Image 1 (cartoon, helix red, strand yellow):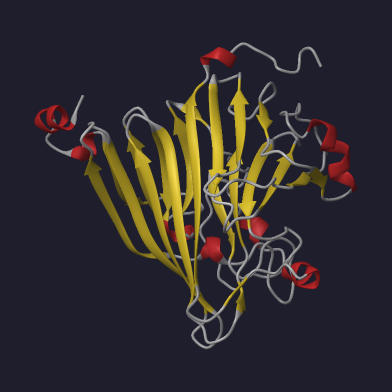
Image 2 (spheres, helix red, strand yellow):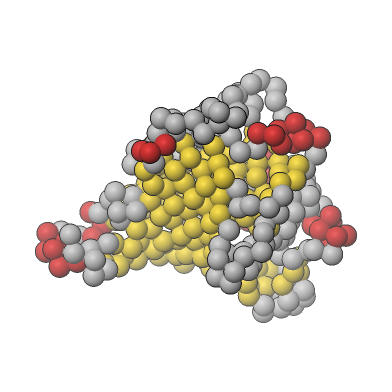
Amino acid sequence: MNAEELNSSLGRLDHVASAQQSLLSAGTAAGTRVIDVKMWDGVDVQILPDRGFDLGPAWYRGVPVAWASRLGYRRPLSTPLSAAEWITAFGGGLLTTCGLSNVGSPAEGEGQHGNFSHQPADDVSITRELRPDGQVLLTANATILEGSALGPLFELRRRWTFRTGEGVIELADTVTNLGAEIAPAPILYHVNFGSPFWSQGAWLEGPGGDVLARDADAELGLPTWDRAPEPEPHVPEWAFEHILPEASPGEWPSFRIYSPPTGVRCTVEWDASTLPRAHQWIHPASTINVLGIEPCNCSVRGRAFDRAEGRLPVLAPDEARTTRLKITFAPDVRRAHSDPFALK
């Protein structure tokens, strides 16, 4: 159906590209804002304006693809967060942003994973564009501030783009240092997948290059980093860093996840010019069972560790940095009943 046919048959474009803004009225996140995005023959996902304009639950053609933690929805915490407070309000969701003052372990007075995902979004706007081929693009825009009036202050301008007829989610962030001093500015995108999409029988392809275990616990999981483990009680989390191979200009690295249990595949790709590192998180414990894909510009050991290594990302006053990420879901009927490890 081309644009003329679609335009003549519809009264409103939001019939095929909907973004309904509302307030949660019950539960632990009562009073917080949500935007329910529903795209014809595409993805359904919740945007969380009071949690940094991050993404919550998500579905592709009815298949739940995002990870949900046992905590469920949580309202944002007061900032600045204490050292380990971040994890007490981590409800999961398809994408959680870590930063902008710290990523990973608490360091230099900054808490685990920073404060960004507890900041409210302002200037929220939704637009729709009908393309000549009949595809409708929906964009959700917002501005998020993190910092203080007298100290470091960052502005992040965020744009999500969704498309009818495709399981595509695109993110573009521009972070600007509004402060008067050079400031640490690490950022990590926690892209989280859970059951049934990430369940036993699912597997993934990395971007290539070496895979390094973070610690002794992760060493145990290193031989099977590329497949969904069978959940077991009392198993520790595993974290790996994927050393990205050199790429041609404009070429984006990617992870590809295949889910025979659901017949869906997913590609996570990003602009390595501003996100030159990538981590992977697996927690195989029963009732947790999560895969995290984490494009970033830093380690997950905290900014003191990165500073000591000479790899701490910073922004000068008025300096801006744009980061881009793309998540694509698609049917994978060819692999729906195959086991790539059966002969290994």
